[in-house]
Image (cartoon, rainbow, N blue to C red; front, side):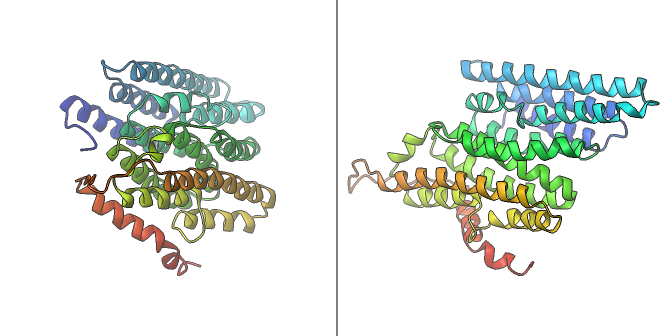
Length: 336
């Protein structure tokens, strides 16, 4: 099971989903703020378990950063209500609101809490933090852009996501930096259109889910554990395929959403930004392929009678997704 059917946890999970809907469907900024607060207060009980000190530390860090971002958000809303007659302040409002929302989703230059919090979470919570918790800030960001500010943020995101993943021994931190990198792509896609963001986000969520699920099944948190994991070769191959898909290498399905984003960026003459995006993807792919290369080639002792079968009904689904992922570009050629 990915998630123990604990009634308390299920209750908070339901509130977590519900709070996102509150924020998205709200009529006023204040309603959006309320949704964000409920979201924060429902995620913390999901993180914290009394027996694990790392979890408590992660929940405290998460609470502090999110509440600072919420305070900034509320402050900018109230300020804009007071000074709405003065159009001179419009730029500053959009700057503050965008900053607080970027802090909410763990984007650069407010990203320092993100890998640290990820380090203390279980894989299921990592998955929620990397996917669901990005939805609300993203959609609120699309209501009120400060475009010049966001161009810089996009570039910094992809660069820091790529460079930060170097020298990481922890898989959770690696996934966190990969998430920061993908955030740059997502911000660029939401600037172009919300439908494009939806496509990108759905693909990204699927790959993140598969990665988190595979790591959860074999109970792996660090890269060196991958080297000594010889129980199921198919799982290793699955991890390889999904890592490359996350990086966005052309024959795999992960390239498809990036392809569309690059296409739109080039159509709108953002040549430098798309160049930086592609280069950062190359750096990430280098990091991923280095890990895959070592984990497939390093071999610890393997006894012939040492066969362990991991029984999990979800694995068939994961293999099916891998199959789609490898044949994905054949399907996606019909789109262009």
